[in-house]
Length: 371
Image (cartoon, rainbow, N blue to C red):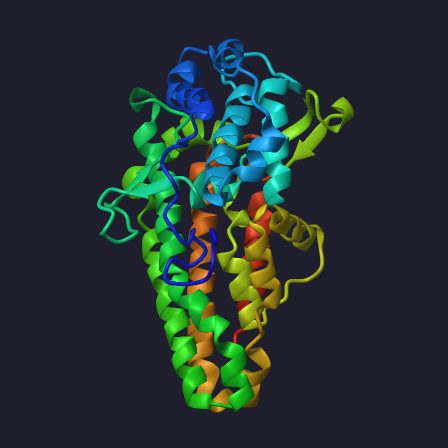
């Protein structure tokens, strides 16, 4: 199984594989390795078909391929699609060629996610440990796939993504804690719930410490010019050979596709007011791995139990909210400094008017503080 909840949180149970071993897929790997140079030379669109000219029986291949390899194939082809559609310096395109579209769509159907680069591929399945016996943490992580060469911002791109990997690892303790909540509630064990909330707050605090490190290795200028252009969504793109050549629209890669915060919202009993924002956040769950969606839906709210034992549990519960608010506030700060100050049209890669929406999320979360 590629995912089950343990010490890695929502990261894969086993580290992502670093290479496809099937000889049939050698040119797929070669295109991934050459992608940054092809993008730099503005030749990816014209040359990608050269790499993929040998026919592959995708339906047969996908039946016999292990889940970890499926994830790597999907990661590579979703990078290929974004490199093709989002090509700075080249005219816009409304078509994704069949050599990219057909495998991407078939892989997407196999894993039940939309056929576009999303957080699960960009972050969750796009890292390796430098020391395999060491921790999953900044300093011991390297990226598997890039859009950029070293001179074009690779280090900033690496850091941007790997900070998110580190955050995912730090969230594991909180996820494991809230997963045990139903048993504690059933036993009406206030002492155990106090420990659970304290563990959750400590884990969220570690997430915040990781989030705070973003400016160390990813500058706002490089992010805006070299990282962000490749992670927007697709608007009215024809996937040639798929969907009867009817154009498709998908959201771009965004941290809103991480399953951590939705799980915490469910567990802490935070319900946002129904709006276009909440509809968007629900839509983001379709871009998450299926087990993560199911985990979110299955998360039990602790709020009623906390309210019933407010004298003992108010402070540790509020501490969890404080850390969640701090996380969202820092995200808001980065959105302003990394994006909003540089654009006239403030739309996020996921397609949202992020400044008012992020502010609304923060304010609504504050409303759940217990007095």
